[in-house]
Length: 298
Image 1 (tube, rainbow, N blue to C red):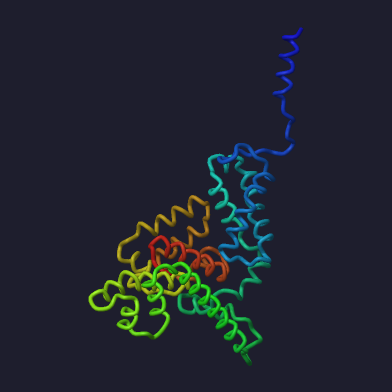
Image 2: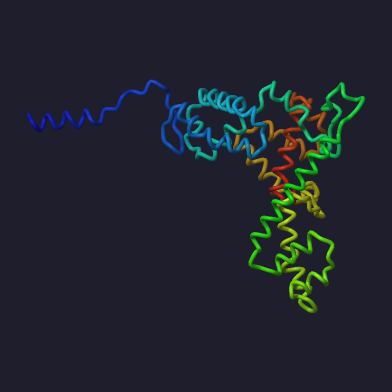
């Protein structure tokens, strides 16, 4: 009887309650319900959307949009996440978190008009009508100047603290941000005469590049990604295309393929049956991905 009781006890211990919700296999945590998948991914997705500078007020709606599409895709293909790691799952939801219609309307006038005017398309479609008479720019210019000053002061303070123990680097920072002559700056750093050239290239130049990177200053180069692509360097371009294909971002793939054929925005919008605002959004994302793939500066 004791042996029989022990066997029954072991069997009872192995019994687990039946879970009423549907489970989906995942590549990072085994079988999870959709609620568990959502709870697991929400913190990382929120950080990613903030990193991509999505409006804070629209984050809940965009997350709802992304998970709604993910639920639909999982319903059609329950094994969608079976081989996906957590990063893959984040990309799948992120690619599906397209702004809803009312969010797109709210963001419609937040596109970069200067960028659109210099690149392609018709920026007039984004201008808010009704304010053609007068423009009040004094406050925005003042605010921008204050923001630039605050950013600059923070960067200078950061670099000064970083190079506190290196006087030549501190002098290089002083030389870059003032009108002091190279000879006087090198002399102050103790690198005058034959050491001046070494100090300018080995100390001042890296500090200048670091300062430009921290401030987000545009550093022009001879070739952008378009020139490199046209010249025959196509491998990074198609690697970007394959990346978006793996994320099942069909529209982005279609936009990239159109850009490879030098297709215009209007033709692309008609072919994909998208509004011009969506084409501009996809093209901006494509330009950013290609710039990183070709290692071109911002």
